[in-house]
Image 1 (tube, rainbow, N blue to C red):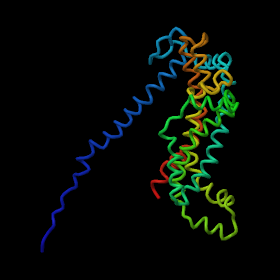
Image 2 (image 1 turned 90 degrees about the horizontal axis):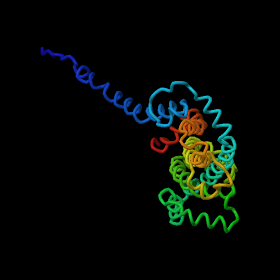
Image 3 (image 1 turned 90 degrees about the vertical axis):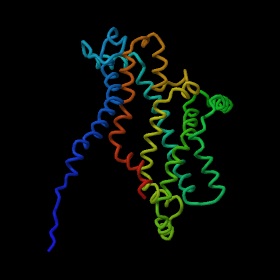
Image 4 (image 1 turned 135 degrees about the vertical axis):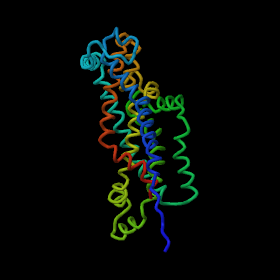
Length: 286
């Protein structure tokens, strides 16, 4: 009879000192890349003008964050700028999601050389920068320069490619049998899209919504050329008042403004983060 000698498994012992290295490195990197800038913004926004003149990581001698928030809201015309941002962002996001998802549904379901060319043309806006001078001149010819409608049109044209790129790949993962069954029951194209396709698109549309909202919310370059001086948005208002007498060298007010401007999207992201992650990974697991 042969006997088998069992050797103790020492693999776990050998790897145990190293299993904490990767999480530790990740935590340190996250603290360095995210925690330090966040701390700098918060502590600077909590200081008075003299202490914040040279921003650093030191704690303030007196915590003035809420007082600085009140100054920004009352003297910085922030509420009016918030209304301008919402006036431009909400229609832009809704319009680009509706039109982009409908276009992506057609491009993802039908195959032809013409549609392949249209798809390549549709997503070309991701890599091709918009021509600012041409946009401004065209809006002037149409009488839309300096108007919210013109700014909404610019944003929709700029970010339509993002929605088409995200949603087209997702549509190709949806079984066509769902649409065929709905058509057999007498549903038309609009009903099929609204009842069948659109609910399935919600995770990827949530991702596109956050990305496009983030782009529009923080945009100052295109807003300056299209509606600058006629309509205030939050980043445009910050740019204008930061170079004027109120915020000149007042870093505590600038950082307080940045915190208030970031809070709405931060809250939305925290609430919808599960759908956002699901939308990013949905096309990779099917």
